[in-house]
Amino acid sequence: MSDAATPTAAAPPVRNYAMSCKTLVTQEQIWAATAKCAKQIAADYRQYNLTESNPLYLLCVLKGSFIFTADLARFLCDEGVPVKLEFICASSYGSDVKTSGEVRLLLDVRDPVEDRHLMIVEDIVDSAITLQYLKRFLQAKKPASLKTVVLLDKPSGRKVSLEVDYPVITIPHAFVIGYGMDFAESYRELRDVCVLKKEYYEKPASKL
Image (tube, rainbow, N blue to C red):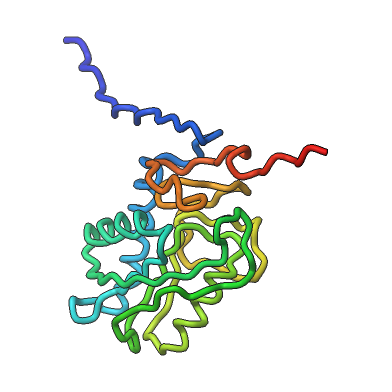
């Protein structure tokens, strides 16, 4: 009797984007890494005996982390972790590719978060200026606990000293778009995390 063929998983589709010079992380790789992170969070938070009345508050930092937050919430659901979603918005970029160094709070959480378990959900941490600001701002609200989870950690870009509690994927220095992340409010809808071509953000030198 001949051996049965071993089934193989279908390869993820190759997605090409005109504005991208490279796909850094695929949607499928993000899902796998996020599922693994959710398992670790679930294990770490068992000590808090989370329930529907004592959930983990995922604080989605708009706009870039909205897709990541949705996926993380569903993977945490798979692990039996009750969550509630809140939204906060802060920015230090504007329409440039480099941080301005000044953080603006554009939207605060609506629910009282005192004595609640909070987790800041960020799409990417580069300089860490915005995340440092948010940690200090939220810590002043006296939560029961405060942790950070970040889809893309870029340690090479740090301008302040800050450690992320749950870094999902570490990336090298590059300006990335897709999976919720933008350049000048474009390209959030790309399924993968891609490196933006320089000609899309570098202005040509003026002719003399």
